[in-house]
Image 1 (tube, helix red, strand yellow):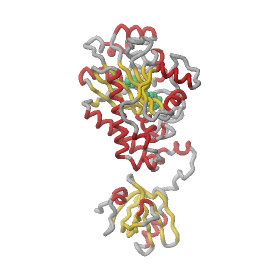
Image 2: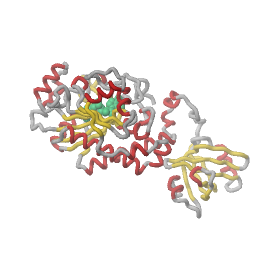
Image 3: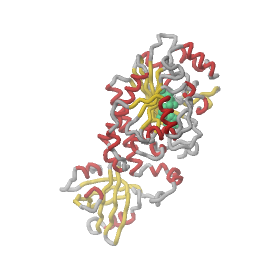
Image 4: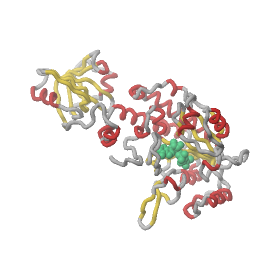
Length: 432
Ligand code: NSS
């Protein structure tokens, strides 16, 4: 059995004596007469393989000449320094074998966004997509590590539910045997129930929103990191968020420098992501927006333009707290110091990226919850179990939900959220 070495490890620890064996996909290739330059790609990097006629059996040389882009290949050879090659090294082949030939690849250099999306199953091999997926995995690993250190237990809430967490407008309904159920918009209510067993919980699940809006920051299916903690108020909730976000960004900076560089992400601003984050009250923010020329009144929700205006000159994320009740969901806790508002916060990423987290302290007063549900025409029956939580040993508690792709979009500086997920689902697309 040949022992294959990854391209990344060959470039970081070059093997300048003896043979190396590698395998991957043809990333670029050109040949002239008796020599082929094939750049190979694997999950860890790219390296140039030079195949010279006479250094290997003729049939293998012909195979190398014919090997098209994205053919999978196995190569052995010797490694040499070469200033012109990517990474500064090349492998001079002594054997070359095509494992799986490739038809002409439908993706070439300049392609329309539509063609790239239709060929997403092939496009995800691109170096940019690969880099984004690695950063995303590292952000999630960073979150799990930090949450485990803080004593949070990861739990697995359901995706099929009978209650709406974030309102009826963006619900996906589906037939479930003889009745209707919804795809989960948020695990929040289930997490609220789980704190009575585990106190500090979180989950990472898909969430679904029937978002009709075509924007660069909305998906219909996205990954949601949600957390709920017993005995914690909105201020404690914000402290968890700022530390969690900072720990995730720090891990990406530590482990994904090469990927962020490939994505041309300026990492200096990310280094400024350190707790505490600024807290800005909604009412003060309205005043600020009005100074900037927005005709916005107390009570209006924030759109992308407003969020951009607030964060364009910020170097680090900002919390906006105390939203008016009419902007937010019925389950939030009223702020007794300003009963027009809830004890809630949205976390906005800097430089115009906008909302990445929505969170709040939860209303524990059953009468208040029932009254709001009545006012908003929300039926009690699907929420019977949720309301029970206020009847059996209720405690102050808070939690939040982070849009994982929103985090990735910000950390990787992506223009569109669809590039933060391998198979984006939007109004226009559920294929491939
Ligand atoms: O609607 S949220 O603001 N809040 C909730 O769902 C709470 N129930 C979460 C909780 O407290 N457990 O959504 C939370 C975050 C929001 O800040 C965005 O970052 C993200 O979820 N989000 C989305 N990401 C991508 N696409 C869409 N459509 C989307 N909607 C929300």
